[in-house]
Length: 358
Ligand SMILES: NC(=O)C1=CN([C@@H]2O[C@H](COP(=O)(O)OP(=O)(O)OC[C@H]3O[C@@H](n4cnc5c(N)ncnc54)[C@H](O)[C@@H]3O)[C@@H](O)[C@H]2O)C=CC1
Ligand SMILES: CC(=O)[C@H](N)C(=O)O
Image 1 (cartoon, rainbow, N blue to C red):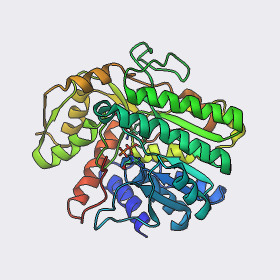
Image 2: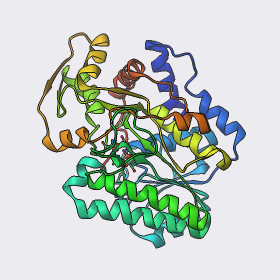
Image 3: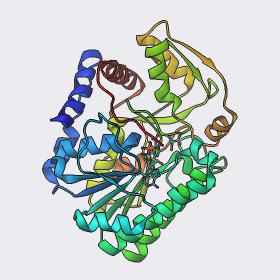
């Protein structure tokens, strides 16, 4: 019921503000009707994306299908949590223990250090983002598991064409995050080719959700909503004209569910670009002003995050994902603004929810 409430909130929020043509739950329902329930282990499940995916899986198949794991303690009054386990992904034996004891057939590997935090602790980023992926893939090979490991726009770099960036292009990132994600993409492909591991991946843009983000370059696009509601004003660490690709949470969750459910035969590659829409800080501020006319934005540029953003694509070409497995995002910028305000306004009246702790 808790999961239904989460998505009920999204659905109702949208109905109150800007009705969309499609029931946001429909794509999850349709997939769950045609697929056998998986047994999914989510690593890093208390982070920004893990929490949402946990709720979607439970909504689709019931709470028995998901095992949550992370290295931090649950907040005291966390909601939407069941079968939560301590799991350090640097310990391969512990991953294997959970996989065997809980009869896991699919791992969604979300543990990672994101772009901005990665630059502050390169040795830890190497450990978590590279050793962690190696451990997951080795366990997957041994126990014949399906594995999803997300990649990112950060896996591209300043020499990549920045507009409508295709799946196959130059990948020379200049952050440890990006380098480790290229490694994850290549290692996953290698394990697929060499050991038959059913590895699947997508390069996500910045994900916008009503959950505190974990330390990335695109985090401003979430913080701006909290600031708008609390202060009517946001100070942005990126220049007003910095264009980056983004996607709303429900579309992101749908992409994971859809790619994992896709028939192997339909996949022409193991790593696909997916995206929602692109905007600059100036443009999202304008979109916020359309529903909150007094909203103000000013700028205090963070050189590290600005230079990371300047090295990333401004828009992604996700036509291969659309063609091969039917990817079709539903949220644009205005719908995202509407649903974010609706969700955050409701959250203000609720007890503490789990927030990202990375
Ligand atoms: N949020 C976004 O905008 C995007 C996220 N991604 C990818 O999606 C995945 C999930 O991202 P988020 O949820 O945003 O990240 P997050 O930073 O919110 O969560 C990461 C989680 O990993 C956990 N973790 C750190 N070290 C660990 C360890 N040694 N063992 C186990 N868990 C550990 C942290 O406690 C945290 O809960 C990451 O791989 C990220 O690169 C890709 C593109 C965009
Ligand atoms: C786009 C990402 O991978 C992430 N949100 C980050 O900014 O590091």
